[in-house]
Each structure stands twice: as C-alpha cells, then as structure tokens.
Length: 153
Image 1 (cartoon, rainbow, N blue to C red):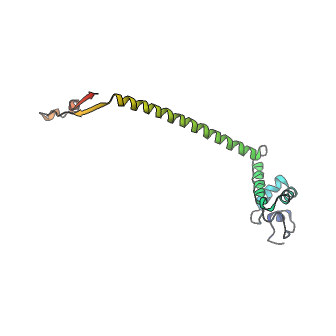
Image 2 (spheres, rainbow, N blue to C red; image 1 turned 30 degrees about the vertical axis):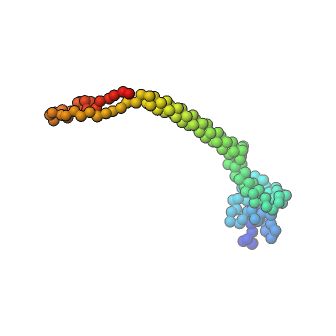
Image 3 (cartoon, one colour; image 1 turned 135 degrees about the horizontal axis):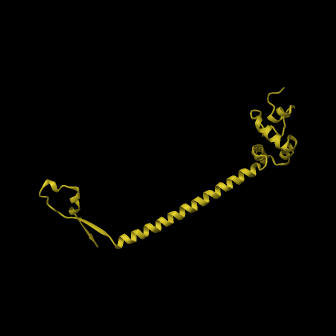
C-alpha cells in the first residue's frame, strides 16, 4: 500500500494515480473531508463535478461541496439552506435592533435639545453671599440654605 494516497483513494481502497482528480482537494491527512463529501454526493459524482470545472475553480468547488455536505449531515432536511436562513434572520434581528437604538438616540437627542433650549431661556444663577457666623452652633446643615441666594434670570 502506498502511504501517499489521497484520502479519497485510501477510503475507496484503490491505487492513487499521479493525475488523481481528488488528490489536490482531499489530502491524506484529512480523511473526514472526503468521507463527508462521499456520504452525500458519492465519489463518482464528485469526480465528475471536479473534472467539468476549470482547474482554477476546483478548490473553491471542493470547499463548497465539503461545507454543503457537512451542513446536510448535521441537518438532513434543510442542510446549508437552514444555516443561510438562520444567518439571514440574525442579520434581520440585528438591523431591527440597530433601528430601535437609532430611534432611541434620536429621541434622546431631541429631548436633550429641548432641555438645553429650556435651560438657555430659564437659567438659574447661584451666587454665594457672605453671611458671617456669630457662633459655631450656626454650622448646622439646616442653616446651609442661608449661604446661597438663588436668583432666577
């Protein structure tokens, strides 16, 4: 047995030719990749699909087949469509949450602008006035209101 056989040829128990269509996409150190694809599509179909594609597109196709096969094994009914649907729902939920937060920000900004406008027209000025204390007993918290004079403009 040749230890350099690709994962596909090893799984199929056959000799791996030098021009093996599977070898570049199913390396011997990752047998689960081919097993997963083989369970869903079959070796013959995968070989035909790869041969019909230009060489520069085969890696992408093998990766896609592997992803889709994994999804189909995890979810036999929906496969990768289920994953895509979940991702679309998450995007929709995030967009709705973003819209709600932007609306809250706009409402708070408008409220803050109204408050600033109100305070601009009705400013309260606090001016300290000197009130000499004749005895230490006047250092009472209740008497601190006498230390400031509140004048409305």
